Length: 218
Ligand code: DX5
Ligand code: ZN
Image (cartoon, rainbow, N blue to C red):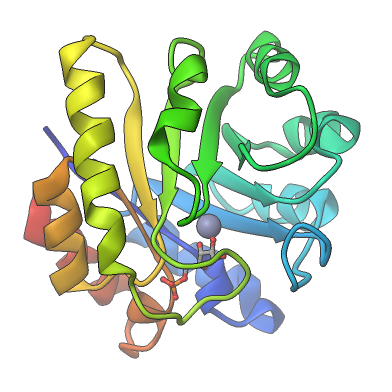
């Protein structure tokens, strides 16, 4: 199975986003990860649909949009129109999860569900039949550059064996604190997509850092 890399632009500078995206276009990353934060679901603010639609003009990569927001249903269409290819939202929001999944799928966009470190994996089980991707957070959502939470490995293993056992077609994406070392542990536990932010951007050369991470698993 091939392992996909989804670089999180949160690790880069928004003042030079065109350069970041053009570099990622040249890299082996299949996806680009967009962390949307509303200062309400998480204690930080990033960007909204206009930013994503502006960036869309620079890239044909898969736009992997991670919504860390409340009121997902209200803003959903804006992210679809902005050019998201995959929209993931959090299971912990106070909205009708099934309705939102159906709405996303109806637009022809892939749907993911994300879970925070304290959310047991069993809570996502009722929705697995409808979704394309699960994001297992290995940091508390809100900020890049945090330490990987090793206590989430069992969750990855449990979800992965459940998916295999039931022959479900769902990608397992891991988000937070990914490096060579932690990425390897996640892949061994069953992950097939790795989000990486600060680890890639802190290496100096974004293209080669992304390629080295990709080559390590492929
Ligand atoms: C955290 C975000 C992550 C973050 C990852 O809330 O969802 O995508 O950007 O950044 P690193 O790789 O630095 O943990
Ligand atoms: Zn993310």
